[in-house]
Length: 188
Image (cartoon, rainbow, N blue to C red; front, side, top):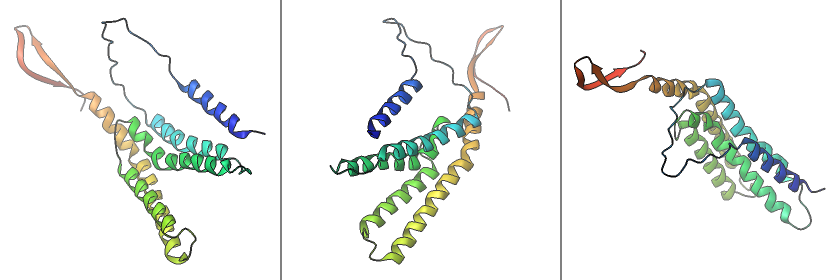
């Protein structure tokens, strides 16, 4: 039974199902930009959960069992990296949905991943178990703090994004013509 073929088919089907239809404008015509819209906190949490759990599921399905040819080890390493990337990057997806870039939680999780890599490379055969295991436990703790940080600050990021949409800058037109200056309109 070839599990990797089924995994590839499942991934392609998932990507094609999630893809939007392509649209083209006639030559020389500038497409109208859609107005930015309000973001939902529930959607932001769903994006975060999907971006974290989907790579982990792909990693679990794709790793398979090692075979006699040695390609199973390479395949497991590649799918393992997909899972690790999901664990480091996924919890920040809701913040990216809200228009933010690098978050504090992402920096914490990235630092934990680097520390884990350094500890594993520094003591691959666990010859010094006490410092290596303590370091790994510390890295896991920092990673968890990064996940909790991003989950805790996500509502604030959504509010900040939605609040930025409420302020508008427009010229003020009166009965005496266009008045020089700028008008701010919005809800406070």
